[in-house]
Length: 335
Ligand code: 3EB
Image 1 (cartoon, rainbow, N blue to C red):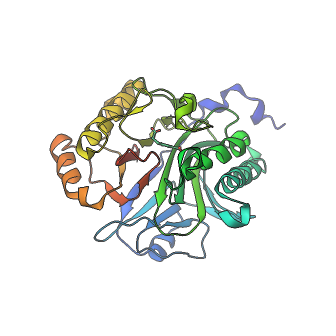
Image 2 (image 1 turned 135 degrees about the vertical axis):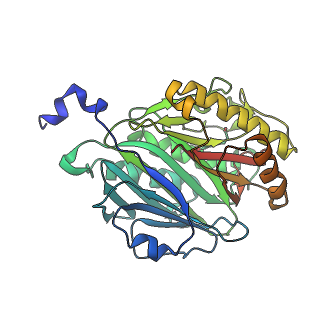
């Protein structure tokens, strides 16, 4: 063990802020800068680029769709570890992996494999000086997430495999996450995430039962995520948040009522994350709204603008929420 690893002050080390923004530009142009840690494309963005910092998630939007760009500071390095792509700068790591479901033996096996590979890569100590990396945030995208009846639903199968594979990723506890369904017919599980040399703090929402304690009715294995992660830079990484109170979906069939319930959950989560996070609030956050029905977009945008005029314009993407009775979910990165 090196001398720095044995210092108890490790977790109080300063982590610079992650800058996340939506950018209207070509991915190639954005990736030319060496302070760019990651670029996530949606909709019409290129399906693939020969750069480990880039991932396209095939969720549609309407109108011109920006790229999501994460910047940390100059000197970004990047590479591949088996099927996993990574980049690193300023004590942050970005990683992404795509697993073909058929080759893995189904969606549960694909999830187990994706998480096992992330865990295996973390064990290689990808940060400089072999300092341990802590996962702060995970995003999961899979095709046809609500397909299958009861416990055969693909989301529930995904949860089974994730729970088996995540052990080596979540040794210190679960991090914030999102799980959303694509509609591209491509049976490839996509997982990407953020890790850092400074551990985050998991935050739960007092209005909601912790996801990993959901009762049996939602599936054989509960989802393994925290409601948010507060980072060492005191930024709140907000999980996909929906109209779940306790463990139950609220306002089934009413997207605007689900939106308002989601906003109440987001307020409650910010309050639970501490005074500094609560004071900064959601106004400076990069928000993403996932909508099941594209026809709801205008009403949702209008309601958001009226009820929360201080918020920046979210990126609205059309996708399936992991419970079939939810029509809307919001996630975010506090600036
Ligand atoms: C919920 O509150 C809504 O399985 O990783 C939100 C965020 C949801 C993440 C996941 C699921 C996940 O249960 C669903």
